[in-house]
Amino acid sequence: MVLKYFEIAVIPGDGIGKEVVPASLNVLNTIAELHGGLKFTFTEFPWSCEYYLEHEVMMPETGLETLKNFNAIFLGAVGNPDIVPDHISLWGLLIKIRRAFEQTINIRPAKYFKGLRSPLVNPKDFDLIVVRENSEGEYSEVGGRIHSGKDETAIQNAVFTRKGTERAMRYAFDLAKQRKKHVTSATKSNGIVHSMPFWDEVFRDVQKDYSDIGTASYHIDALAAAFVTKPEIFDVIVASNLFGDILTDIGGAIMGSIGIAPAANLNVNGKYPSMFEPVHGSAPDIVGKNIANPIGQIWTAKMMLDHFGEVELGKRLLEVIEEVTEDQFKTPDIGGTSTTNAVADEICARLLKSEALSK
Ligand SMILES: NC(=O)C1=CN([C@@H]2O[C@H](COP(=O)(O)OP(=O)(O)OC[C@H]3O[C@@H](n4cnc5c(N)ncnc54)[C@H](O)[C@@H]3O)[C@@H](O)[C@H]2O)C=CC1
Ligand SMILES: CC(=O)C(=O)O
Ligand SMILES: [K+]
Ligand SMILES: [Mn+2]
Image 1: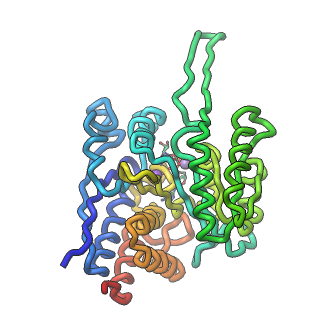
Image 2: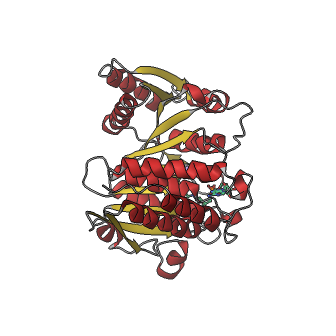
Image 3: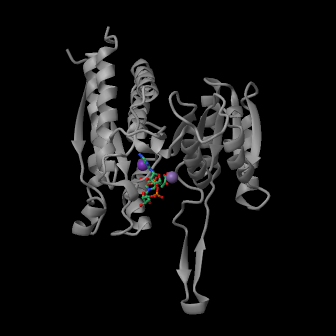
């Protein structure tokens, strides 16, 4: 008997999104089978750069209205710069959804991963999570271009509201309560004289409400370096949109590959669905070869399970992913010879062999 039923909107998008998403849907179906009381329905949308070539939009006008009714959105990656400029494709689909659905928080974990060779010489057992402000900051539409020729000028304004800044910081502190009770703020108030001193002030204000949580503040340049030299000292890191974006590619890299890193774009007011996608993009350089690492997308599915309250299942999935990696079912980016599908299939097979979870 089906007890829980989740309707998922699936947007594979571009490039390797079309490879890692189908592989991950098989894993989600296997998870449902293992559970016994869980059912997913997947409704796929072809919105992508190819869709743009045909329709001159990344998604139809009714797209958001359609997506609104789903329990979650499962997305691969957006972008094919050979046919559509990146700012058009990303702002027409990925960022449009993040903004319209008030997915104001983007959480992105990185941890020492069993079976992986980190590029760090002597990696300690790190386990961190970046809380990225996901609705404003440096990624703003405020600005414009004037003049031409030698006088041509571009102005891009960053937008930091107290509401948005505080929301990200409070999310980070609340998350730290359930973890190692430490929050690091990513700032750059030595160079950016308005928004970043403001960011620091809000951080100090919010901190007062969390006396049991330790804090630190790093300039982003030093923080990026520390991610490489001593990632084990971090627990939760709160960062602006751009800083969080950059830090989380580093987070993927120190795990062993950006192809592993997952992300969740969270709607925290409950009005709209949240969106789950890996940190990586569409990887045009490896598309069509069946060698894309599916782990980022599959770990993203684990974050979706957590979001649905299926924490035990999520935990089991991550354990199986690590086990499969340790047993050398690996794509080339992490030093193996397996295909995308072989890795996903092995994860499915081991899930089915593991003990049933339904009660
Ligand atoms: N959230 C999203 O949808 C994002 C979209 N993009 C878009 O993706 C396109 C490509 O962007 P890039 O800057 O090249 O970043 P990218 O993340 O697509 O690729 C960077 C490097 O990592 C490798 N890589 C990425 N994912 C991998 C995986 N799963 N397995 C193995 N290797 C993997 C790629 O082969 C490439 O060498 C652009 O159009 C960009 O705008 C980029 C980042 C995020
Ligand atoms: C756009 C992008 O790189 C990201 O959201 O991670
Ligand atoms: K992505
Ligand atoms: Mn990024």
